Length: 354
Image 1 (tube, rainbow, N blue to C red):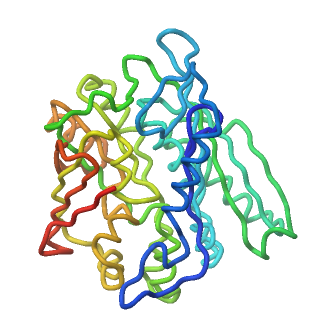
Image 2: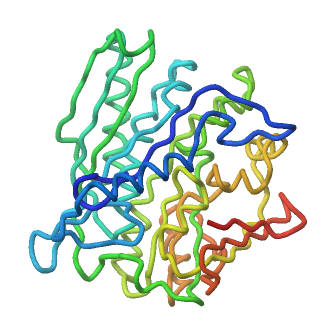
């Protein structure tokens, strides 16, 4: 997500009533219309004048405003979507704030920024002191992992707006980026290597569909609360030692692998994502077509790093930080095309175009 009046606008997708077209479910069938949301984003871009002082980025994960010739302030905002419903249903608030921080600071990383400050917005129907403390504790835990500080926020009780036990969370993150580390996607070129950083399950996107598929009494339902990985430590380590090699970073959020399209309009992506599917994704794959899976979920990779050199060294650095990274593909000259080989899901290559 990003600040609308600076550079652009992105959308978080919500859920309505599930439908079941034929045998397989879709994200749109769960009530999430990505195409209509994208149309709205385009409308906002057409009526909202851009601030000419901002440093433009291809992916628009964050707005970057220069405060000196070589230093920019980075702003972004996001939420955790319908993951709050699962937390409420299971009465488990231990990590929902960590998810909130992750969704924001991971976006800052995509422009090469160092997270610094965080604000939260917590809205609910009925005030429960114990629940509120658990949520704030989990936000602070996320901030510590992201090496940033919670410096304020807003708490709002609105019983006429929210149902009993329902609540919503939004986060706002600020960081700084040195011009030498600034990533705008312009240096991406065919032949660049794609490195995938593995995810911790479904993270915080696609839950409107997953909740319609996985029964609440299934052990897999509890796995939907596994917290989103915060990639700050491994990415900042790489930026400190291999900044010249990194040409793009993609945080896999709403829209799944199609987030790669945000990086550069002139090129495409070819990936080999064959791996052992988790039990969760195996269950989803029985109900959702392979292409729809990749357009909705992160499918095991929460972030992609595009590099023009030092791919093996960068993978080793990320793995040393306690995360898992693999070389998974390359940039191609086929604009607006993502080609995925994944023999665990499909005998044929999966092609996604825009």
